[in-house]
Length: 460
Ligand SMILES: Cc1cc2nc3c(=O)[nH]c(=O)nc-3n(C[C@H](O)[C@H](O)[C@H](O)COP(=O)(O)OP(=O)(O)OC[C@H]3O[C@@H](n4cnc5c(N)ncnc54)[C@H](O)[C@@H]3O)c2cc1C
Image 1 (cartoon, rainbow, N blue to C red):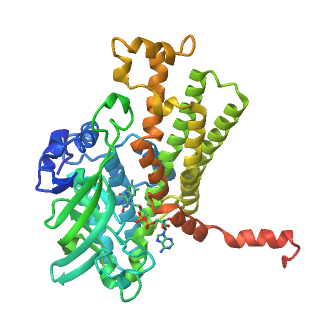
Image 2 (cartoon, helix red, strand yellow; image 1 turned 90 degrees about the vertical axis):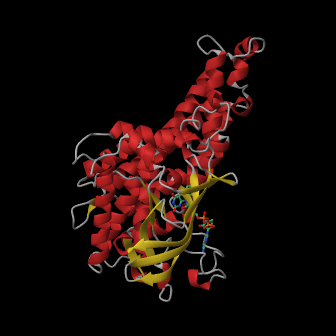
Image 3 (spheres, rainbow, N blue to C red; image 1 turned 120 degrees about the vertical axis):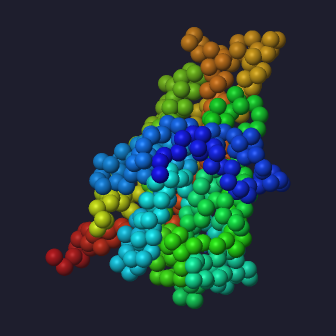
């Protein structure tokens, strides 16, 4: 076994996987406009990390054995493509679940550790397939009109299980190798068939992935951010897929169903918080640059808005630091971030993100959405006029300011910007899920003790 080179990754995509987009089955993934850049990003990741040798493996397979190592991984993941990030998060989530269920089910825990070693040895990329179609949200899985609204086991065989259902919004599924399937929530007694976690190769018979993507199809220079950083989301259909026993991590034990979702939530929200901390600083940088380019950087309400953004970015980063500083060790010696600080920081970052974008839009002005395209800027006749009227003062050329506006639009106001606004709220399970977990891990007794003391009602 060895690490995959860039070429080996590209070749690995030609494995018979069934991928669909814009009403057609995609036969040549590597040349399709929805996937070209995503595949290039993943391939670059393979090229960057490649090391020869039987024992070589990528840093994304590191399991943190201390707080410093956890911090290092979080710093490194900011430079990884999305699939490399989901590989690390998905496998750490599985290992977290393994540690938590080992006392009750050593067989599943052993299988998870075996699967981790397999992915590491073959340098595979994994995605997290957790969100079900869910049908009527008021009803439980077993109460739905369509019993397939949540992924379920439809057949149990001596050598494995057959699963049916769909997992929605799965980031990067079509350009990865493995679907790490987990229940989306706690299942109740009677819902044993829905308590299923397993690993399925993307090309397994019965897997069909329908894709959406914000990747710009043309005029790439007007989309400086999204043309470089885009990944498809997959609507993953599991049409009676056979999963052999060694890849089955849960098959009916409802009492463990929530363990997987919580473990994934923890790692996904930690990764999201690391990204949010960087995005917070990026939004501050964009706001300051455009204010300077417009000549408004000393105007008092602009300074106040930027100060508000500075405090937001700093508090998200503080939450991230606290999540690492309060990490706890498992019996295996692996470090897990603090549930309380991870969820509180992710919630704060996500809930206030749109307000920070509003500040940036307020500061920047209408050219965020109306600045002429780069092609017009380069036009022989109108280009010089655009440069002249988009310039503001010495040192701020028309081209510089136009490009800044395009970056702000692309990052916060266009297809990618809209995707970001929704994704910040929904990824990792939505604000409600983060509030639930934060409340569960908050030291409420200590808070009550302080309140009783204040009220003069404390016993001691
Ligand atoms: C860009 C993007 C990428 C994603 N990537 C992945 C991925 O890689 N893997 C993955 O598994 N998932 C992924 N997700 C899915 C994400 O976790 C879900 O979107 C999120 O959990 C919400 O689920 P939903 O979209 O089905 O919306 P809903 O479940 O319909 O939720 C919408 C709102 O209704 C509320 N709600 C729903 N049901 C109830 C209820 N019973 N009681 C109270 N409130 C309720 C929710 O709290 C939320 O506020 C991704 C989402 C996005 C947008």
